[in-house]
Amino acid sequence: MKLAFRETLTGFRRAPLLSALSVTTIAFSLFAFGLFGLVAVNLRGALKQVEERVEIRAFVAEGTPVEATAALQGDVAAFPEVAHVDMVTPDSALARARRELGEFSDVFDESLLPASIEVRLKDGYRDPATVKAVAARLQTYQFIDDVRYGEEWVQKLYRVKNIATVAGIGLGLAFAAVAVIVISATIRMAVLARGREISIMRLVGATDAFVRAPFLIEGFIKGVLGGSLALVLLYLANSAIDRWFIHTTFFEPGLAWLGVIGGALIGLAGSAFSVGRQLRRV
Image 1 (tube, rainbow, N blue to C red):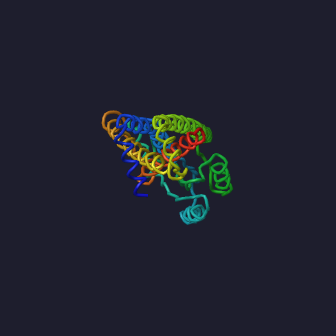
Image 2: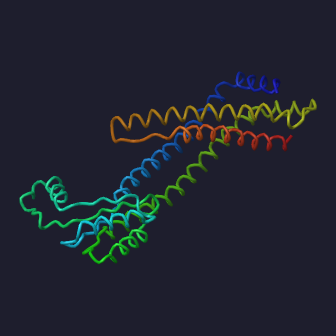
Image 3: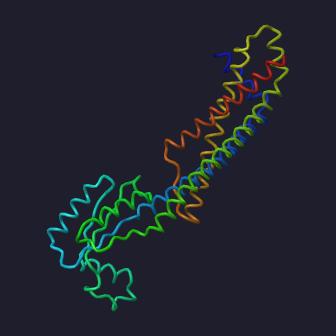
């Protein structure tokens, strides 16, 4: 193993420009893939924030006893799909309307705004079918006059979310495939540049494992360096966008390090494939 590491360092010293080109190519390939990942993460976060605003509002009939409304609130809170339930009194509804629609504050009257309960659903239960089912269950209570939840808006939101998910997976796989192809081609160039060295090693009786080891280590190191450089570039790009354009979030630490590990594995796999082809030729 020590000999393999020594050969790896020798390979870096013999062709520093080619090694730097390999690391840079890996870095920019992963950087392009990472930029798409950042867009996907932030788009998913934005859609989740909008999705959290999905709510069902059930209007209580005038004259309904407070006890019945409180019992309804407890029943609805026990639904498995419900995260929490808020009771909105006519006074609270009036204050909210005047606060949110100040230009029409003189128009609102307490008698025009009935009491209601606002139902927020748990994550994973905000699809149109579930929202509609919960709304229908609320409508079965006798003292509920009307139930509203913006059915058309919920359906459009769910459709956009599905389209974004499918498009994200498809484009992500395409970016990943391009990155793998470019990185593999770069590593193959580095291996071909040392084809004569591989031939000499085989002539003097070196085993395939002995020949492969330095190249695999070299590919792994290049992948780690390229992945780390790509991560730094992504962080700088994200910071610039967050500061000068719109608020964005960066990858979570686990996901960020997964990118570095992915670069290392791609470098290792690219070296293994390229060296294997070269060994079959000699």
